[in-house]
Length: 195
Image 1: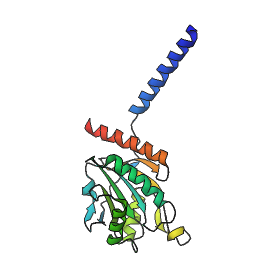
Image 2 (image 1 turned 180 degrees about the vertical axis):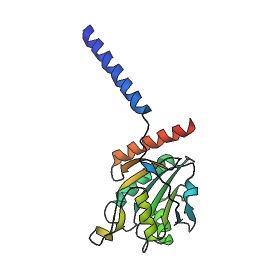
Image 3 (image 1 turned 30 degrees about the vertical axis):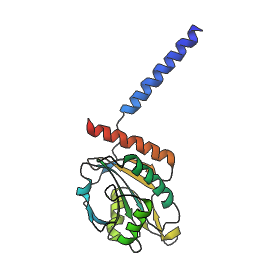
Image 4 (image 1 turned 90 degrees about the vertical axis):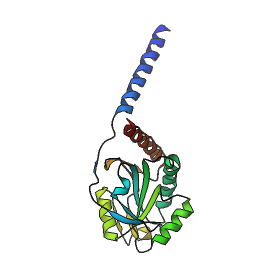
């Protein structure tokens, strides 16, 4: 009986030590966003790198008429929006890859349907090639593809960017469990900022 109790205590000690070590492990840095960008959001306002200075943000690529993964991605993004909507140091940035259809008015209507504020979540459009080039800087895919449903192909990734414009994580935007992991990692970065 004493041996079993000792074994249980040792296992508990190891589990606590491992979880503390994992919590302290830094998030990996995948690269830095050093490209200057300027797009237009759902309010017809200019959006650039300076709007995200000293902020943590999550970005993605989508289009409003997407018949496949975008609706799942947006429902997961709403979870992020709701979790961090009162956090001044956090924002969301969604780039449309269908610049012909997704005008400012279409993006504004889309944001209104989701019930979100542009102060927290920017939906941007701009020159098609600049948006596709921006996807490359985030190290994800985005582009036209006639064989794809809706005529466009893009990554389903949510990309986590820290206050220094460094890429700190990639998460599958269609999976609830990865969104929960992303929420935990955002909290870690927000706590790093406070320290």
